[in-house]
Picture (cartoon, rainbow, N blue to C red):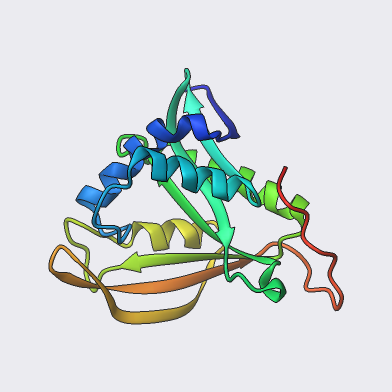
Length: 184
């Protein structure tokens, strides 16, 4: 496999939505019940790109996954912290694509002056057909540490699931940090 990582454009919305659709319909990884419209999804991409990177990995022109950063909180004092999300094509797991996407995303965020990475991850009491602990394990392997748990806070497919927050520090916590550079 010879893959390429690049910045997503709004024109990629259909390919990204086709990946995301699987997670909405078949998993408790995302807590959306309805598949967003193509226009809404295109708008989400455009909104993200105004401030943060959104990257995809492709092989032979086919997008196999994407990852992006978003605001952790909207207030100015949170500008050095972001929340990350990643979605791979259901048939593209176990090939190192998620690790490569996150490494590229982390590099972009460091250049911006981001210090704290956060991931809000659903996890089950015990693995089931809709959700496993794979995402927690994936983030742990990449150096994220658990910083908080919320028990039975979300419901999908008639089941209650937990959420955990994981954190990775990628920069220095300076006394007077420079303002974050907006993604270009």
